[in-house]
Image (cartoon, rainbow, N blue to C red; front, side):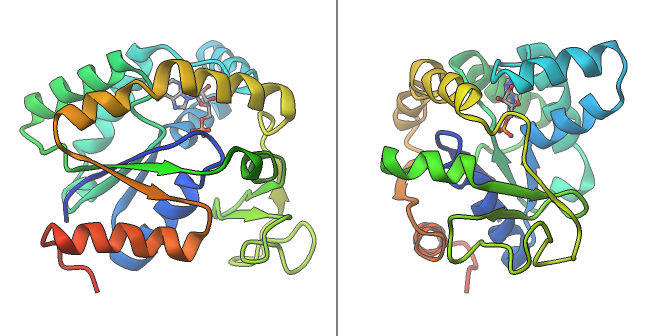
Length: 222
Ligand code: AMP
């Protein structure tokens, strides 16, 4: 399977789509946000610095990200196709990623640009609840993703929590940053002829749109 990059503003459903594709087709899901949150849990100086940046919706330095990505995509679990969720996030990261791929002799694959009407975003972010145990994403405002029992994961029964950066203040910073520094990489990938655009208002349809793109490209997707 070819590798995928999911591009979208926070709350557009990158994580939910990546998890659905992983479950159905076995892609490795690489969320730089998850990698960083894990690193922050170590609680050392670097961990606390990372947590502080994440909680305020501010980018972690490219060097830290490059190291994490290069290590992760070299692992055997990434050999049969992986999905990047939350990386690259600016032009330097897109260029740096191209160099990492060249060094490791790997293909870029396909870039999926997920669009969503802005009024849907607030509820997507403020309503998001994550499972502490399995990482499943729920949303208290979504019929499809609503927890069946308040505070409890539908998949594994673990406790749900709200991310510290899923508040209106950090969300504003993250959305502004997206349009200023992440959106320009859409053109970078358009020029490389690897960019596909889909509407991500609704999960089932979003998944079908990606499947159609991959089928057209000749991937074995049923
Ligand atoms: P996410 O889980 O993708 O919403 O990311 C949460 C936070 O982690 C972001 O607001 C950033 O602070 C940090 N982060 C995640 N991915 C990156 C990246 N590629 N570059 C810099 N910071 C990142």
